[in-house]
Image 1 (tube, rainbow, N blue to C red):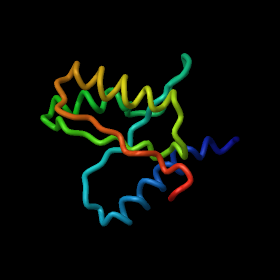
Image 2 (cartoon, rainbow, N blue to C red):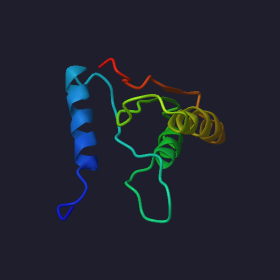
Image 3 (cartoon, helix red, strand yellow):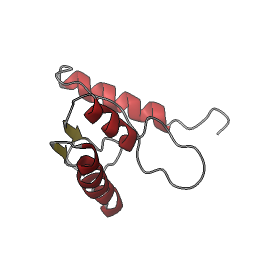
Image 4 (cartoon, helix red, strand yellow):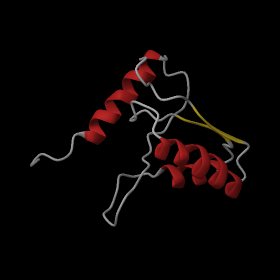
Length: 106
C-alpha cells in the first residue's frame, strides 16, 4: 500500500454522500473511534470531540457509526456505554444517542 490506506477517504466520501442526501440539514463532524495499540490513530477522536462539543454548550449529540456496516458488540459497547454514558456523564451531556448501523438495509 505505497499510496496509503484509502479508509479515511472512503469514510469521508460516505459521510459527504449521506449529508448530501439529507440536504446538509444538520451540523456534523467526522470523528474516529476504536484506537487499538500503541500506534497513532486517526483524529479527531470521538471522545475528545464529545468533550469539546459539550464544553462549547452542545450537550445533545447523535453518534452515527457510518463506517460500520453491521452491529458489532464491541463498537456498540464503546458508543453506548463508554461514550454516551461514561464520557457523557463526565462532561455533563444532556443526551448522547446512537443511530442504528446500516446493517443490510441501506
